[in-house]
Image (cartoon, rainbow, N blue to C red; front, side, top):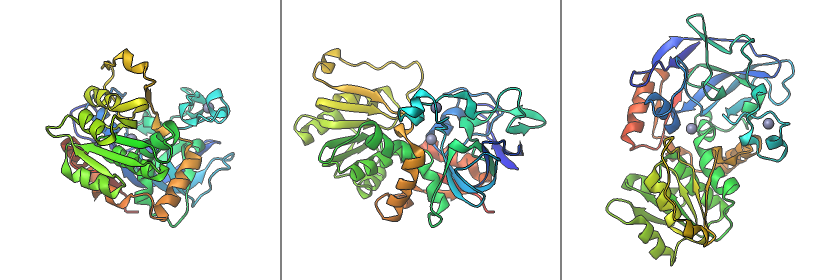
Length: 361
Ligand code: ZN
Ligand code: ZN
């Protein structure tokens, strides 16, 4: 099969022939229909996060099941599926207490002694995020995908595979925003827009979107923001405090920077919670005034929106089909796999919501 291979930071991905195995007892072979190009892929391409290479990146995908292993009961050939990097075993302590996205059980992967799922130039190739989605096909554990309704367009379904689940899940599952509470979202890229939409779904009373770019603030309004603040030449913490008479119940950091994470914490009212969704560079430390903690304020992280994706993703699909989840405007451009490097250039410029690679089979 054809796949986009990452070789080393700073050099473009190349389209190569990569071999893919047959499904083991609990595995599923999926023909990829669409895959979003997410900011976390860029972190690896640019070397901010290390990963063994060569490797096929990509982790925000939807497709059609081609073949299943003999013990697979959750999906069948022909099913339309969304994949998720939060692969879960189903019986560890995290899984049994409802925190599927914290599962790290190795049994969902192949062992060193097994034949590899992927191989390149006759050598085993690591799988990225248990998915490696910048490819015509994916071979995944059955608990890394979920079937969705057939009338859902697959290019938009792909977005639910990472960014939308991460953003809406942080609001609904991690922070548990209650109807009427006030929300601020710092950064309105794909995940930030999803957080704004999640706050609207949760019934937040006031949803304040913050970004440097006016185009993204316009989009945020379409996604449910009630107020927008341009971060250009503005003290955003003061602006949020003024708007809300003392701060918000919930702030969501959706960029992954020290400054914006500290701002998110700074704009809370007494008892408020800041949730950091963005991927802050490893080793960077946050400065938080501990006295603020004595006002009952909390700072927390959110992994993949604390998802229970087999339940959450079909619900998100229903929200889209009912017109309550905005996905159409989130796709700024559709590209072929061969144009993948252009998608990364666009992400570096930071102007667009999201590019999606679509496969023409
Ligand atoms: Zn992602
Ligand atoms: Zn588990």
